Length: 550
Image (cartoon, rainbow, N blue to C red; front, side):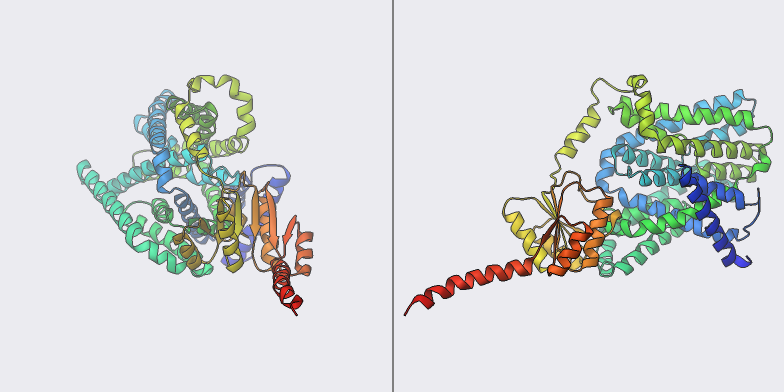
C-alpha cells in the first residue's frame, strides 16, 4: 500500500488482527498495540512511514484522554482526595528519586546519569493507568480516584521538570530564580484564567452547545485540543492543558453526557498513542543495559507500590485500597524517555541512559499492565502479608464510607421526562419515593431542576453514560422513551451495566408492547390504553345517574 492513507489502512488491519489474537490468548490489548508499533516500526519491519500523521493522531488521543480525566475530577473529589493524593504523590517522588539515585550509583553509573534516570523513574504513565482503570470500570472507585489524584501530582512534577529543561535549553544564561519566577507567574495566570472561565464564560456557552448532541461533542473536542495547544504554547504541556480543559467542565451538569460521547473516540485515538510509543522505542541503544534494567525494573515494580501502601496505610486507608492504588505506579511513563532524551540534547547524559530508560519502560509497562488487570486475585493471595500496611482503625476510609452511605439512592430512575414522564416522576415523588430523572433536552432539564426535581442530563441509551448514574441498589427503572428502538437500546445498556432492579417500559400500543417483551422488558405499561379505560369508567359513572333519571 502506497501513501499515508494506504499505510493508515494497513496499520488498522494489523492492529485489529493482533488485538483479536491477544483477546484469544487472554492477553491485554494494550500490550498488543505496543507490540504492533514495534512490529511495524523501524526496529523490525519498517512497514509504516507516515510517522507524522500517526504522531498527530496520538497527540489528539492523549489530549482527549487527559480531557476525560479532568472531566471526572470535579471540585468535590479534589477536596476529598487532595490530602492523600498530595502526600502519596510527593512521598513516592521523594522515595523513588532518593533510592533510585543510590541504586543507579551502585550499578556503576555516573552522578549526572544517575540523577536523570532516577528522576525518570518517578514518572508513572497517567495515560496507561487511566485506560486500564476505565476498562476495568474502576476509575470512579476509591482507589481509582486516589490513583488519579497522585498521578496528577506526578504530572505536575513532569510539567515543572519539562519547563525547567526547556528554560535551560532555550536560555542558558537564565538564573534559577528567573526560571522560578516565570513558572510561578504562568501558573498564577493559568489559575486566574481558569477561575474566570469556570465562573462566567463556560456555563452559558455549554448550555448553548448542549442544544445539539453533535455540537456538544465537537465543542468538547475543540475545547480539549484548544487548551492543550494553548498549554504547550505558554510553556506547560499539551497534557496539562487538556486536563485543565476537562477540569473546567467537571462542575457542569453536562459532564456525564460529554464523557459518554467521547469514550469511543478516546478508545480509537489512543490506539495510535500506543502504536506510536512502540514504534519510537529505540532498541539500538540497549547494549549492555540488561542487568541494570532488570534491577531498576524490580525497584519500580516493587518499591513504588510499597511506598504508596505505606503512606496510605499511615494516613488511615485499608490495605486493600493501598494495594490497588499502589499497583498503578508500578511502571514508568513515556515522558521518562522524553525527559532523558532532553538531557541528551543538553549534553548532560549519554545515549546509554536513554537505552536504560527505554528498557525499563518496556519491562515495567508490560508487567504492570498484568498486575493491574489481575489486581483483585493478586490481592487475595497477598492479603495475609499486607497487614503491616493497615492501621488498627483505618479512620479516613471509614469516613469516606460513612459519607458514601449518607448519599440517598433513588427508589426509581425515570428515563425520558416528556409530558408523560414528567407527570409520572412528579406523582411518584408525591407518594414519598425518591426519584431520579434522566433527560437529554437541556432546556427541560434546567426547568425541572428549578422546580425541584432531581434530573441528570444525558442519553439513557448510552451504556457509558449509565456508568455515571447511581444504579447500584436501585429497585426500579422506568422508561418513558417514545420509540421502540430507543427502548431496545436502553434495555441493552441496562443489561450491559448488570442492572439488578426491576424494569418497566412504556408502550404506545399492543404491537409495540409485544416487541418490547421480546426485547427483554419484564414489565410493559400501556398509558394510552389505561387512560382510555379510566376515562371510560369515569364517564360511565357520570352518565349512568342521568340515564336512570326519568
